[in-house]
Image 1 (tube, rainbow, N blue to C red):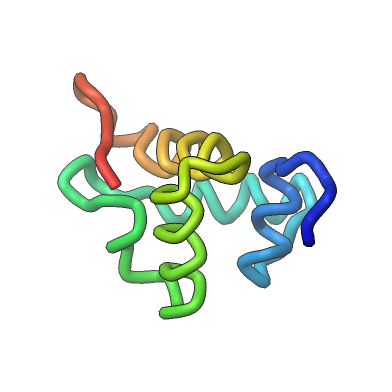
Image 2: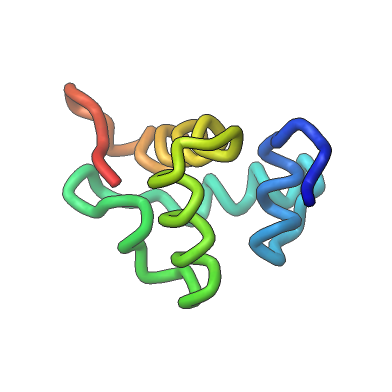
Length: 86
C-alpha cells in the first residue's frame, strides 16, 4: 500500500521518469500537447504509464489531483479556454 501523500515528484517516480525538480520542468517544457490531445493519449507515454494515469484518474483517488496538475501543465502552451478532458 502507498502511504505517502501523492506529489508530482512521487508521480514522476511512479511513472519511471526523472523526478528531480529540473527533470520535471524539462519534461513539462519538452512534452507540451495540444488541447485536442487528452493527457492519456499523448504519444510519449508507454502502455504502463498510460494505464497508471487512466487508472488513478478514473478512481478519483489521491493521485487524481496530481494527474489533473500534470494535465494542466502539459497543456499550458496551448491553453485557449475551457478544461482538458482525460
